Image (cartoon, rainbow, N blue to C red; front, side, top):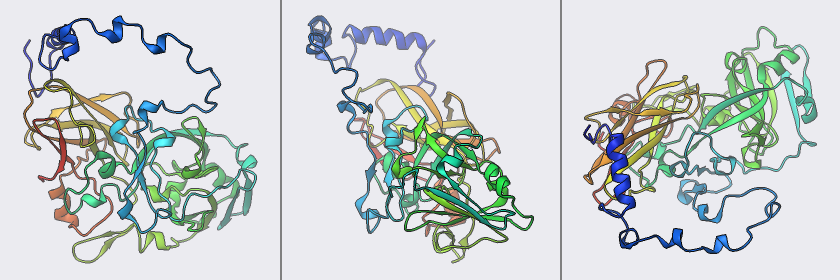
Length: 423
C-alpha cells in the first residue's frame, strides 16, 4: 500500500516512519535523537526527585501553567467599550467538542452582573392563566433535562464579509461555544402558568442593565428551549448568566438571554431594539432580513490555522476542525487541500449530536508544498455550507451577521498559515 497525499498515510507507512523517527533516521528528527539516548528519559529529572503539590493545593482545579496561552481574547477596536463587547473562544487550541466554561466566549451588552441565587426571581406574566414568580429554589423542584448545544453569536465571522481580515481561527470563528446544559424545559414552566390560546410569542428579558430583551415564537419556546442552571456539570459562570439563562438550541446567541428575569407571553412580537435596529441582516437593495434566528450549517478547520502553524515539517499531519448546524445534525464534512477544486471526506470523530458542535479529522502525509485548506459541511436537511461568492451573490457585502461561508487557510511551505480569500 502506498501513501496518497489526499487520502493520508497508510497505517504501515506511518508506523515505519514513526519507528525511523524514533531512531533519528528521517528528516525532521531532532539532533538529540540522532546523537543517542534522550536525556529526558535516561536521566532522573527534578519532577521525579521530590514531592508534587498536595491534593488540596488548588481547591478549584486550574489548567497547568504551560497552558496559560489557551485563553479567551478580545479585539480592542471591535467595540467602543469592553463593557459592551465580546471575546473569543480559543477554538484553535481545544480538542473534542465540549468547551470549558472558562474558555467559552462572552458577549455582554452592559457587562457581566453578580446576581445571587437568593436574590434571583423569575416572573412569568402576560397572556397566562396565572402569573407566577419563582425563586431559584422553586425552580430546582421542577423536573430537569440535559441538552448539549452550541451557542454562536450572530456576528461570528462577520468581519470576514468584506474579505480576509483577522489572523486567527479564534478571531474569525471563535464567537462560539458548545456545552452540556442542565435545567428545566421552558415548556414545563409555561404549562405551570398556563399559556392562553392567543399567546403566540414569548418575550424574554434579562436582569442586567441592558435587559437584552428578545421575542421568541411560542412554537420554539415550547419545543427545546431550556432554562439552564448548570453547564458542563457545574453552576453557570457569572459571565454566562449565573444563576439562570436561556438555552435556545440552534438559534443565534443573542436569543440565549442571560440572568433571565421575566418571560412575558404576548399575541405578537415586542420588536425591541435588539431585534429591530440590531440582529437584522442588511441586503444589497437596502432591505433588512428579519427574524433570522437559525444559525445555518458551518465548519472551520481549527488546525492547522494561523495560530497553529505546522512546526514538525513534512510527514504525517492531522487536520482537524469543527462543524455545526442550527437545523440539526451534521452528516458529513469534506476537506479541500487545493482551495475547493478537490474534496476528501473527513472522519467525524465521536457523536454528531443535533445542534451541537461536531469534531472532524483528516490525516494526510504533507509533502511540504503549499496548501489552501478549506472545509465544508452538510447537515441532515441536505444543506451544504456555501462559498463566500455564493453567499454574497444573495446577501451582498454590507452585512455583519450570519456569515457561514467557507473559510480558507493558506499553508505556506515553511508551515506558517495565513487567512486568505479565494472564493
